[in-house]
Each structure stands twice: as C-alpha cells, then as structure tokens.
Length: 338
Ligand code: AHM
Ligand code: MG
View 1 (tube, helix red, strand yellow):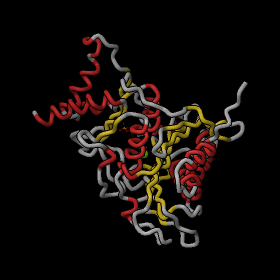
View 2 (tube, rainbow, N blue to C red; view 1 turned 90 degrees about the vertical axis):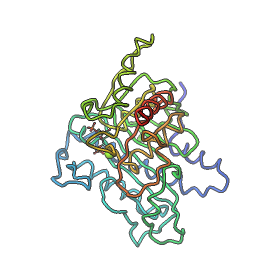
View 3 (tube, rainbow, N blue to C red; view 1 turned 60 degrees about the vertical axis):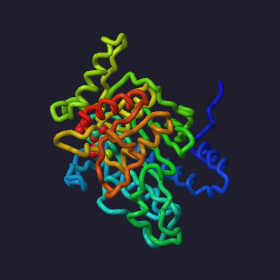
C-alpha cells in the first residue's frame, strides 16, 4: 500500500520553490500557522473533557459573549506567530485594535489577519468550528518598523495567501497561495497534515444552499424570490437543492466547496451589512472559493474588490458555485432595478 508523504509543510515549500525570487518567508509563515492549528485542534478535541467550556464572562468587540476556547485560540495564534520575524502586524476578530509585534522580535514584510475560532456558538455542542486566516504583504516600507492600519486595510485581491482549518470529524487545513486550493487532513497518529484534497475545484452547479432561513421575514424581495426559485427546481425538471446550515461559516463553506453549493449571509432589514466580517471571514473565504473556480459577491460587487475602511467591518456575502452566485446576483439586481 502506498503511503502519502505529501505533508503540508513539503507542499508549501515545493510551491514556493516554483516562484522565482521567493525568500521562503511565506512558507515559514504558513508552516507556523499549521503548528498553531495543531495545538488548537488538540484543545478543541478535548474541550468536553477539561474545564474550559463555558463563557469567560467578557464580551468581544462586537458585543458578543466570548467563550474560553475563542480566547485560547486567539492567544495560541498570537504566540505561534509573533516571533517568526515575518510579520509586521496582526489583527484578530477577537481584538479591537491592530496587534503589534513585540519590540524584542524582528518584524517582517507580511500582515496576518485571523478569526481564531469561527462558529463559536457551536462549541458546547461538539459541532464543527474553524480558524480562518488571511495574509497580505505590508504596503508601508519593510524597514523593521511596526505595521500600520493601512497595511491591514487592503482589499482582498491583495491577499498573498489565505486558508482555514475545520475542526470536525477530522481536522483539515485548506489553503491557497494563489495557485489553486489544497486540503490536508491531520493524521492524529503522527501529528502531520497530509494532502487529502489535491487542487480542489468547486462544482459549477450547486446542489446545496446554506442560509439562516429563520431570518426570512427580514430579507429583501430579490433574495426571497431567489430562494423560492431554487426550491421550485422540480418545476424545471431538476432536483431541488438541499438545505444545509451548520451555523459555522467555515464548515458550511467547506462542505459546499466539496459538494457544490451556495452560502449566503445577506443584508437584511435589521442588518444592512449582514453579519460576517470582511477582513477575517469574507475575504479569505472568497479567495479560496475563487481559486477553486467559484464566486463571492456582496450582492453586486466582488467581495475581494471592496476597499476596507474598518478592521471589523461587516459585509453581506453570497459565495459558492459559479452558476448559483450568477443566479442570485441576477435576482438581486432585478430587485434593485424594479
Ligand atoms: P462568530 O465569528 O461569532 O462565530 O460568528 C460567525 C458565525 C459564522 O460562522 C456563521 O456562518 C454565522 O455566524 C451564523 O450566524 P447565524 O447564527 O446568525 O445564522
Ligand atoms: Mg467568526
């Protein structure tokens, strides 16, 4: 029986070797991220066993209750990433301001943004959760000075790499460095991420839709009509889409990436900007989905072309299989023009 020796680390380094002039810094960064992912995965897996479940009692910058595992993951990522010498700044969904690299560490040319533990309302129920990350090159001079806000507030098209980790029935690390999407499953026996999903392509045709339908009443008419359209597929001689909604964006999008589907967190009458954050959730997921052949829009614009103005800004998102996103866009536009 053949053994798969394509580890995540080897894949990253081989990828970088193909790029003329690459310094290896991005590879080192991704490798360090994978170490943090292993540590978080361990902790998530034993969450039910140790006294770590439950609220810390604090609220995060969005006014939501923070659970201990969120903070643990945030701290772990910071600690894994602050000393490598490749970053000039970080930003996290769990922290209001830009995070500086301590003065006693070298600073480098990259910026890292992350959502340490997405879908945290699912923690207590042992449902899949994940980490999302996004990497940019700084735009201020790479002279060892601290990174600044403008280094963080770059549009998604400037990402040099992005990825996510799903802590599910197994732990999987999915990333893109702009040359396709690759997934690696953590082998718990020897603690390595092994290539399990080579060059992932999202099916053009969706068979799943993922949206919190409880908010139906607040949706705009165009979205209501689109959902009705996909539910009426039988009338057009097609199997209707299945509804699947975990409530963990990472897990919902990961499944749709593999099976074909659309994930929507729309603007609605209560939340004109939706719920999800452009910098920590939408841009990295958009980069992955586009690299896999799909699309991600905010209703009218490409997510990755939005110029951010705030680290924590929210944005509506329609993301997934190309044909499905084309269709919802058509419905939303008809609505705007009527
Ligand atoms: P979080 O970052 O506080 O965990 O919230 C983000 C999560 C996403 O993973 C998920 O898609 C969404 O919130 C679900 O929201 P809702 O419960 O409104 O459907
Ligand atoms: Mg989140």
